[in-house]
Amino acid sequence: MGKRGRACVVVLGDLGRSPRMQYHALSLACQASLEVDIVAYGGSEPHSAVLENESIHIHTMMQWPKHSHSFPKILYPLMLLLKPITQFMVLLWFLCVKVPPPDAFIVQNPPSVPTLVAVKWASSWRKSAFIVDWHNFGYTLLGLSLGRRSLFVSIYRWFEKHYGQMANGSLCVTRAMQHELTQNWGIKATVLYDQPPEFFRPTLLEEKHKLFCRLNRYLCHPLDVRDCVSSETTGIGVDDQNDTLFTTQIGTDILLRPNRPALVVSSTSWTPDEDFGILLEAAVMYDRRVAALLDENDSTDDGVLWKEISDGKQYLYPRLLFIITGKGPEKEKYEEKIRRLNLKRVAFRTMWLSAEDYPLLLGSADLGVCLHTSSSGLDLPMKVVDMFGCGLPVCAVSFSCIEELVKVEKNGLLFSSSSELADELLMLFRGFPDECDSLKSLKNGALEMGSSARWATEWEEHAKPLISEVISRNLK
View 1 (tube, helix red, strand yellow):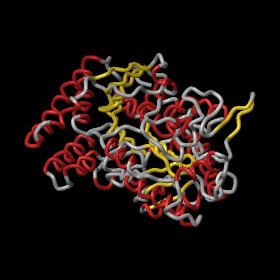
View 2 (cartoon, rainbow, N blue to C red):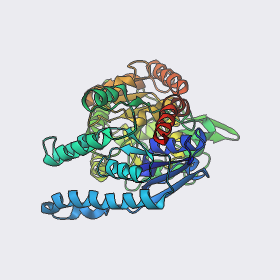
View 3 (cartoon, rainbow, N blue to C red):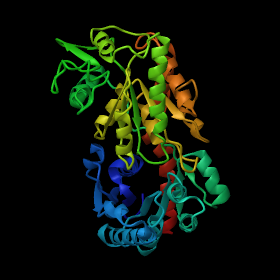
């Protein structure tokens, strides 16, 4: 593929938090037999499959200072100008000088400015093809903070559209986005749905036990937290290799605890396009509604309840443990809100997992929750794709094109409010762990969908022909 046998993947962001571009790099190396350069920012560590592939070469750029938000507000417009100019110069240096000339540049959008401009200039200079992978529209994300009517948003949209139209080829993540690009942007794009790679799969019981042993410190002994999880696990040591909150090992046998909490996982970037408050409100409603359904009054002592659970008593509705993974600007704000909740049957833990442990956690959970609403209404949350790959059913916020992914009552449910989410939690977890038929039905649907499509197959069928054609056309 191509006379130079080389491709360059461009991410103006943290590579470790850009899984789709990591998968592109792996497919270009393994399925197209190309040498691959990745130009991106550092931060989170990419998956080991990327780091260990000898055909993939990572070039890490210096980032714009993170403390720039501390400047006086009056300087904010100046920062908006200085940041893309600085990023543009650094990116252009890497693309035109640091990396060998490729047959094609494949760039993630957003961010659009200055990425699309720099990659277009570099592709012209180096006589390479220019391919855009549309994940969303950058101007809609900027509009979340500045407002859609801002002059900066209008200028940003012009750059995004103008330079997007200059691409030799385009990929996008949904049919709804493909239609928008064709009808209103004059851009012909090929749909490449996000699909889970092979390492997203259901987790074996032994793998679950080892994972929870590694996480004992964070799940059972969090700092300054006393809740329905930490109170029960005082007998589980930080480095205990036999007992965890969910499993126990007796000799060579590993068993799931019958009175374990239901494990709910949500991955979030802690940004304004994901309203985490919905999940907190739903947790409070679940806690109160369970108490009402079980005829408990407000004077019921938490310690007595937790002692009964610790002694093995099972209730019609289980405790819920929400594990929230991810990094982002609003994390500390919501962690403070969580500390003030004071719930009897619900606990929260926030953490950042390695690229290897994250799939294991999804494959060990009972339910996934997705709060992504999409700034454009045209992209789909990749986290849900990963959950389905692990056989994990999902409750997701409803928005315009989410049903391209979540099939209601087959592999998940949709909600529009915290009350609806609370109702779904009550319905799905009633009788947990053995008598929750609705949850089991959704899990079967998620397993079926997760096993029916994988990234390598999707890329081979849709991305590879486009990239080959674009490179061939560019050589003429």
